[in-house]
Structures are given as structure tokens and as C-alpha cells.
Amino acid sequence: MTGTTDRAAAPPQQPLSGITVVSLEQAVAAPFATRQLADLGARVIKVERPDGGDFARRYDTTVHGESSYFVWLNRGKESLTLDVKSPAGRELLDELLADADVFVQNLGPGAAARLGLDAATLTEKYPRLIPCTVSGYGTSGPWADRKAYDMLVQCQTGLVSLTGTAQEAARAGVSVADIAAGMYAYTGVLTALFTRATTGVAHAVEVSLFEALAEWMGQPANYTRYGGTQPPRIGTQHATIAPYGAYTARDGKQVLISVQNEREWRALCEQFLKRPELTADPRFATGSARVGHRDELNVLIAERFLQCDGADAAEALDAAGIANAGVNDVAEFLDHPVLAGRGRWHEVGTPGGPVQALRPPADLAGIDPRMDPVPALGEHTERLLAERGRTPEQIASLRAAGAI
Image (cartoon, rainbow, N blue to C red; front, side, top):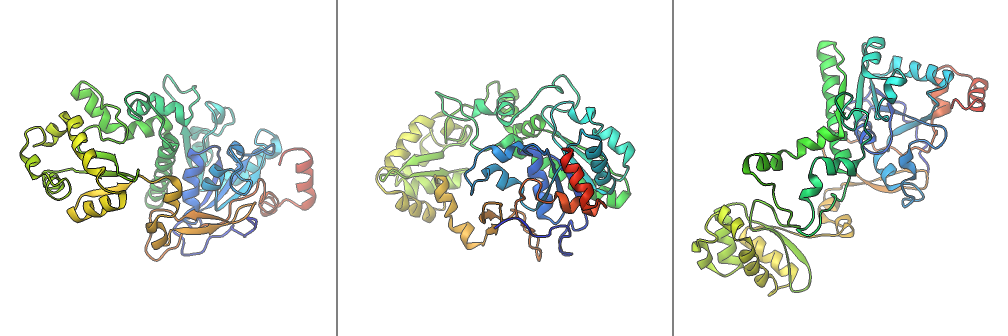
């Protein structure tokens, strides 16, 4: 199954039907933003280099020969191969931008400005266009020229120092800096579209990976600045709440529990631990006291978990009204009853065959997301050029010259 469905026009019920997005994008952050626009019905034209396209296409080959990253991030888009540095390629890009509503790019530091694709230049040339720039550390400031990738930003924001065990720091298991930047770019574009619709003014949008993840570091930043020390790195335990973490049951299954108030603490003591006297123990009487005596508390709770299997522990915790969750691996997540019961999986085409993809998490009543196929490299080049008035002979000439 290949992504050959005609996606030039979204169904009229789609919220962003009629909106055209041109994107010079690569990797994760910008493609994540534009994929969500495509899910809402926008026409997303993904401009890729003729000599391989978005390098995320080659991160791995695990999904029917396609990259797991690329399949996740690029459904519903049209792929146009274009050498934007060639005169003919740039002419075609300018034609697309003249008719577009949004332009998204996450080129390397300074590349957009060298190409005349920076926000200031585009705003002057195309007043209705909403330029969206996704950078590493911002387009100004002392680190504007510095390359940034997800793991580097996790390190720079201090996130890595909070993640892992006391013995060893660890990166977050997903690309959180990229995802954060992609989400803010997506919501920034939506805001700019709304503002343009209500005021007629098109505002440029800029998001950096560093500042996006910096926002997510708000709580540990406050804790460190005003408490004098940063939250400790303690694995699955919560740095400032106890008990809040994973414990191993008799059968080896880990179950995470969360106790966030005194009512829940009493219920845990009386109904699960079977130790009602602990509610009056001054070591555990308040949240701060429990954090201060975390090691002693963990010994008591761990002993109780070793008396039952994981499923039985979860059942008993549910009966006591204690929030809990099994620590799943990815395979268990894929089979999660909530995803199946709520119909979250949807088949999407890729060049190598159909795959299961999750519906966007924000449901709009009465509207189904558009989840069209993942494009092959340059799959829509000829059609898009024909729309721009190029004849088959002209298209062949452009291909021979390496412009497409």
C-alpha cells in the first residue's frame, strides 16, 4: 500500500480545510508541528532535498523499511523534492509561498537568513504569510549560531540531571525537547491563524527547543532557586512527594503508587498496609515528614508489596482508592485496554505498507482527524508542479537539471 491518495483538498468539515502550509523541515520538532496541522485538514507541502530528503527518513528502517520517526511525524503531507538553492527551485518555492498561509522551517543556524527565508524578509515580501521558525537556542542571543539536538538541549536545561538514579543520570526516553518545541510551534501557528482571521495581521512565530524545554523545567527551577538545592534524582520515586513511586510485587511486577494527601495516606495505612498506627507516627504524619523519612517509609511499603502479586496489589490499592499503575513496557502499552476500548488506533498507509497509528489526542466533537498516508520522497512533485502550470516537458527538464 502506498501513499497515493489525492490529498490536495481536505474534506470541508476539517477545521483547517483551505489552509496551505509550506514546510522546509527535517528531524522531529518542525515535522511534529506540521503533522498536527495536517491532522486538522491543512494541506502541508513538505519541501525536501532531491538527494535524500528529510534525513529523518534514514534514522532507522524498522517500519516496513521506513523510519519509525518519519512514519510517526509525516502522515498526511505531500512530498515535493526541490533544490531551493537553484534558481529554478527557488522560483518554484516563491510561487508556493505566495499562495501559502504558513511557512515552517527548522533549518540550521543562519541558513534561513542566507536563503532569504527568515521571518523579517518573508513578512515584508508576503504580508499574509505566517512564518514559523523552530531553532535550537533562538535566532538572536549568544547561542543563536549553535547547533542543537534534543539530547543536547536535555543536558543544557538540566533535565538530564533530574532523570535517572542517584548513581547515574539518564536522558528522557523520548525526544522531549523536540516534542515540546513542536507543540509550541503548532499552537503558535494556530494562534497566529486566529489572529490573522480576526485582525488581518499575520504575526511571525518563533520557538526554540531550549526555551520550550526550559518552560517544562519550571517546577524544578522554582524548587532549586528558592529551596537552595535541586530535587534529587531517585529513579521512579517522586522528588518532593512520598510515597510516590514504583514497588516490586512478589511476582516481579512493578506497581507505582501515588499518595498526594492525608486522606489517601490514611487509606493506604489502614486498607493496604494494614498498619493504621502509622497514621499517627510523627515520621509520616505530613507530606514533608514522609519525604524526610522516605527510606524508612519505602522499607515498610516494599515489605507489603512482597506479600502479594502485582495484580492483587493493584486490586487492593483500587479498593482503597489509591492511584496506581503497573510499570508497563512498550509492548504492554501497545496492548493497553484504554487505547483499544476508545478506538485510538487507526490504519495509515506508508510506502512500505499499512501501519497502526494513534489518533491525535485532542478530540473535536463531530470531527474525525485526517490521517492520510506517509509520503514517499518526492511522491507529489509532478502533481504539484503541474498545479503551478509546468508542462511534462518542463518538469522533465527541471528533473534533468537537478532542480527537483
